[in-house]
Length: 193
Image (cartoon, rainbow, N blue to C red; front, top):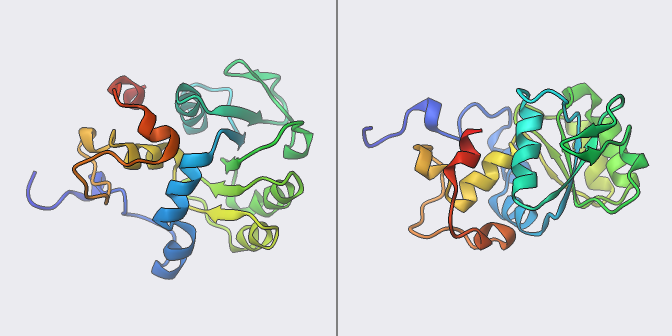
């Protein structure tokens, strides 16, 4: 590989956000802080199908010891966890609401995230909705958009560098961010599920 990474390996490519929006919704300190404290993640649109990105992300989070709370209108159990039809049906505190639904549905979930007092409203890679961001922000939630929570763990815990990705993080040491720093031995098989 030359002195520059290819676009296929660059995690900063293909964002839907402008530079100003990235500074707000993809701020590294916000992402690090969120990854460091998040112990429960409600995943709206978690699929029952193993080949779907949401299932892969949920499997990864669960392997990291993070409680996943599936939100799906029709399923009963996903990855061994009880499924709730809406965010409002979840009977326990939620740190992060992670969205895997079409962008036009996001304002509904932003309002529900505010109603359940979540701390962060996170739209997965490829999702951006200003109205949802406004609703969540006005309700006191931090908002992250157009980023994959699993990829962000990989960016900051060092596992993506081992796979040849340009993480945009220059360091000779692994990041020290809460739960991520506790994993000294990295099992690359988790990244290749």
